[in-house]
Image 1 (cartoon, rainbow, N blue to C red):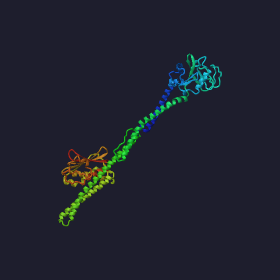
Image 2 (tube, helix red, strand yellow):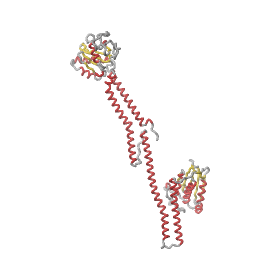
Image 3 (cartoon, rainbow, N blue to C red):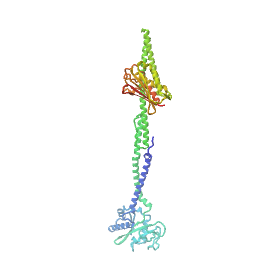
Length: 521
């Protein structure tokens, strides 16, 4: 059984599916994170200072139209889609933020402290010249760069150009803040403060965490579903098919087959199962054929043995009747018939035993070089009286370079004698039988036995080597009586035990041709 190709392996597909799902999940999470951070830090205002000015203008317009309106509700409604957090602080103490959780820690206290340190009178607090970078925990002075101290807890301020200056004099985290004044009727009523730097990681996680979590869970569920559909579902379906096939095979149905598609371990298992099912099917078929052959053999043996036994019984009973007068000639003729039937019965039993030993492997064959010429001479010597009485010629033809045969000399002679006897039996008087031998192309020796009889009908050819099968009715007109019907079966058993083959055909000129192919020495 060949191993599946590595890239079709179920284990590799599971690994690739997991890695691909993880990569897609990380890529999608990263793209989502970049998109969200771009919405936070890439707002339509572009910079924190521009965002502060835009929010201050909208809040000022709202306060002018609705002086007593709900500032917090207005900010939430109008700026909820702005991810950059900001803080609106009015002089009356009102505060509002679009994302309170997105602001740095102590952001509101710092802005309020600066408003106390730099009142809204005089220069407008929040103008570009008043942008500051502060350090939490330091004290503040009333003038830029003066270094004066205010009451404990107020932050120190120092001048900063733009929105990202160097920060305060003392160490610690900086909060660069961009401001924009809220002007109503030329009066500053508050300020909008926007952190210039990105919020801390904890703030970003708190803002983006829920969205990323739900998005990741959705991608994980989608990836799991796709993996189940495209990796596990086909394998599960084929495993179910294999399970049904195994259950059917256990119930005795040897014709079931599992699906072999896929090229993975499941397919390899299905191929192994199918080979096992095919083997079991062939064995079951062979067992049924063997059972039919056994039943047919018993019927044939019973029929063949019943004929001589019936004749023997009949004549013996006749000879034993005291009230039936028999002269000496009649009694001698009856006893001769009984003797002939006894010999026939003995021959049938001997052939059956011989065939059983050959087909069962109980007879051990010797392997030695055997000359074809010696076999032909012994055949001629044995059948010489019959050939002379019926005026049948027996010809030999051994081609030059014909090698010797590797096999058991006695069994090879028996096989050739049976074929020759069959040919002589079905050759009419005055006919001829020809034995020929030549070297075959596949290191074998081909021996042919050809007669000039009536031939074998085409529908009988496939069965001439079966036990007790006789075609005498089709090859009528011969003078020699038929044998037991086991001679050609013994021939096939001997030749196949030697690793050869035997076949029977008809020649166009008339007569039958038997070919024995045996391994060369």
